[in-house]
Length: 187
Ligand SMILES: CC(C)(COP(=O)(O)OP(=O)(O)OC[C@H]1O[C@@H](n2cnc3c(N)ncnc32)[C@H](O)[C@@H]1OP(=O)(O)O)[C@@H](O)C(=O)NCCC(=O)NCCS
Image (cartoon, rainbow, N blue to C red; front, side, top):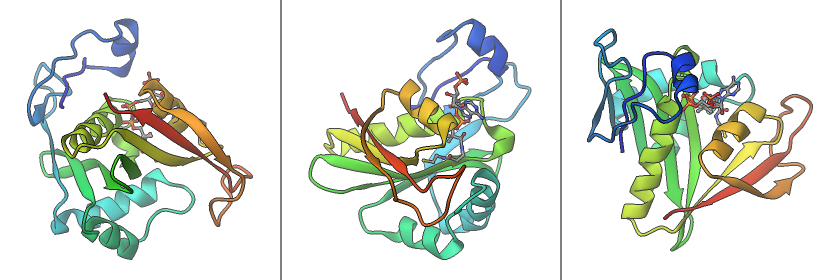
């Protein structure tokens, strides 16, 4: 599922939901042609360098290494997508089924230069749609308990906290190693 958004974050906030039009495989973030079109497509090996850089820029603590990303994308049942702006990767998302009914969003990140324009939401919508196509009924994810921005993002997309794990990560972020597990029913 791909969407068209208004030209600026602020104007979107003033008119929630306005201008959101489902399309297939293409989105114009700037409908008046001020920016190129954005594609959502499967990750390819040549995207890895850019994704590694996005990880470093998006995560101040504990970005996935090149080797970890490579392993994640190569996992047999994983599905992985990028949002691409004329050859430049703006963000990516990765998920994997963990049982017959549940998909786990392993990672999502948008380059800080592109954040707040709906790209993260678009990637999340897309991967949830893919989970549904595979017959999955539920999406789950883990998010650092002090990552308020992302928790807000997930709540906005219908996720709720179902579990708190006090020590989940190796490194501290804002004084905590904890995580919430969040869940959303896929309808
Ligand atoms: C979380 C993330 C993928 C969202 O991508 P995005 O393209 O910025 O998201 P969207 O534009 O679709 O949605 C923005 C929403 O995210 C939340 N959000 C994202 N960044 C935020 C920030 N710095 N401050 C407050 N809210 C923020 C808000 O709910 C915001 O909604 P609003 O625009 O109505 O205020 C992106 O911010 C990111 O890559 N963060 C760093 C990596 C990360 O923490 N990933 C999640 C790990 S579990």
